[in-house]
Image (cartoon, rainbow, N blue to C red; front, side, top):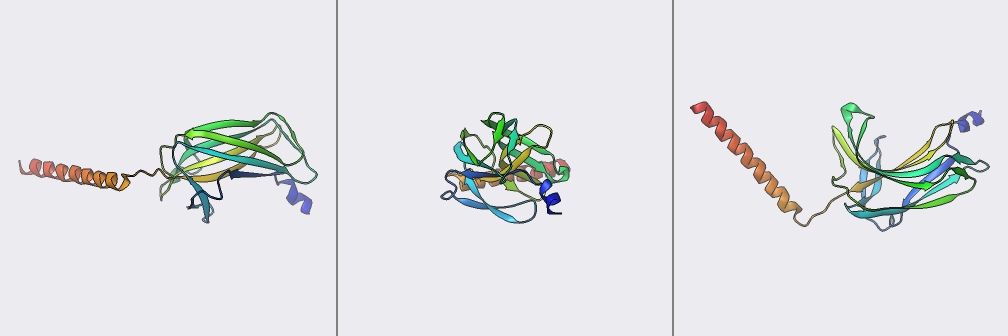
Length: 186
């Protein structure tokens, strides 16, 4: 019976690591299953560097038509679950078609990536950044692995801009309420 359970598992393990993952600042995010996970924090225009390790299960080989890594920025609306809207998409080819017999590592680098929006997980929407590794295969399903990371765009005047935005919003509300008051009096 154990051979049936193993029949549906992928023939390899994929690990995505960041080169400075041990020293980089970490943030907690809520995963789809409700658990929290610690992920590295990046800023816009930073280099994202690391490596992908693919290790076939003992005694198996992985035939593929290519290995690629994608950096994706996605927005997911909770009422439209499962449909992602990509606003950032960068792709790097890691390997040409062939076979993998033993553990292989592929370095990757995305230089000066523009990530204009911060990661966000709200009640109605989620904005996230992920690395997605795809091992493309013929006749069988592709093997895909994801790695989340967080984006925080720090600015020295962040509190000041927030305060100015609140003042502007209050002024607009106050001005619009005066104009409706004037309109109702006249």
